[in-house]
Picture 1: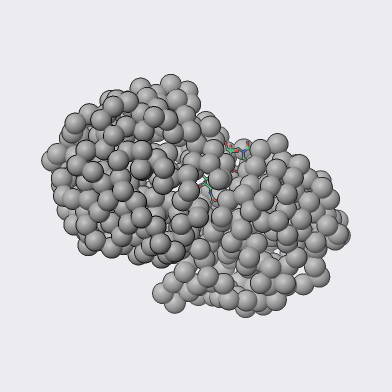
Picture 2: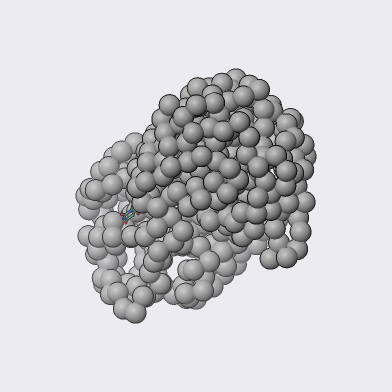
Length: 419
Ligand code: UD1
């Protein structure tokens, strides 16, 4: 187990190239199961979650390879219909394999994802939608045993909440189902649009991706294609926040501007100057950040819950009081206690957190509690006086490729130590 020693206080300056989106790559890799052919996925980030998805595909009989950022999957012949508990536990979002497995194989056995670091993560919306499409599901001893009599059947499905994972699972189950599936109140995240672009390139007939009503006409068979994953909008916001908190200036390359629309005004309210071109974003911070009045997390196109901890870290050193309201997950303030160890002044109760900015944070030993909470600690450490030791880095490795190296090359003082 290693940890990072970060000496804070360096202004970050330079250019960072943004990697492909984790949350796009994962459902797209699950979708390759639907294609009895060869697919190539470019701009696929090298992350432990992506490795876990590749391991699941291998376990199911696919031939999977990686050459730099291109992952190839040959799912012509499959040999299994179960995901062992160890693989399910490696990545909670592996539930997104369910829709693809039952569509391709007619059956699936996997573990219930259970609780995770963001609190309970129910899958009731996934299961009730798949049941409506004809799936029989038995829940026994923490395992889900699923079987479809003949073929998944399309139908209208209204989601009580626009769940990203449930929308993806329904789309995956519907693409080769009999008839038409219409999803009402579907999630509109850019990663869902990317998944649908991949599937349509393979011959699927999906209309309305990115809108709240998605219509999927089942097709008989899909054929392989080559697809490029969209840039990671949360990684983009992370580096923007790193520029902001260190009073620096970063040019972020290979980005998409459109999905950042809810984040740009927040950074600007805090006093950052931002200039966007088609695929680049320059973020320049003022000497001292100002508070942001309120940050309310919402489904896309609202402010992303995955960026809440990142902006909270920057608010810790801003002048004035910032208020955060987390509406998506029940328990997404685990980073608060760790930020307070570094001198942050935060009061969190239920879904609300009030941050009173302090002039300076100070280095302390802290532990990553989850992926984005861990990245928030790195941001705080970059601005803190003295040395911060950050442990439990496996959380960060789930979602940031070469994070320490990228930060070092724009001026951060980070050392990796073995513990
Ligand atoms: C995805 C993202 C995650 C992001 C989240 C919200 C991936 C791999 N992960 O997670 O990074 O933070 O979207 O943007 O893409 N819910 C239910 N029942 C269900 C499903 C969800 O109650 O059946 C609830 C969840 O507990 C949560 C909320 O709905 O409170 C949002 O969950 P969802 O949109 O499904 O998030 P994920 O797909 O798990």
